[in-house]
Image (tube, rainbow, N blue to C red):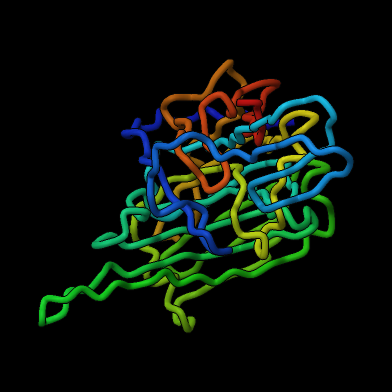
Length: 312
């Protein structure tokens, strides 16, 4: 049962800009915003058996059908609020098929611009290789440096991925996922049990560098990195969309003086659509899919993020 709270009115912020993702196993979002059609796999007829020609082309057995091309789509629930520290909870049932990423994360909106912008990101990710484990990750990057001779030193992202068993299948039932961000530590919890904690003074210095305001986000998409998430073919979407369900989100403020958390607001997704004070929808290319508004709906008291395909 959802606990109801009398919540203060939240400030509305300008909608968060599109984020980006790398082709490796670390980033949640691309570094470029390409306004191009959705990724697709071309399906051509064959006489007998199914053959995978490449990661982008699938040849299916058919005696009469012509070529069929699919477009693939994902979704992002993008937070409008900007936070410096806090506790962030979401009760969710995740998505996991080969090639997929199902996530909850905090993100400094201009990170994808690189250049003079730093990168700050705190991730929870359920990957397409299995629904029985999840990945915790911090991503940081110093802005580029201009040397005395005028040349630019391009700094790279620093990551700290770690995988952890659930002890259950994350696609089978709802569980509570939590990110905790303070000046002294960053931690990850599953069902109110702390699984990982990074603190000040660790070798990579990521907690110290995590100082930019961040937005809370959730997304589902398909990665190009087979080594990270498995091989995405699209076949798993033939019988309909796969869905990440969000039952509710709770956001807590952090008091640096008392080192305590106070509930700021809760969204139970009980209306017919998103609460525009807190959320917007993502719409940009994300490796193998195009994020679009139609793939994020509010239904049955939940936000539903869908990974889907359509014949082009």
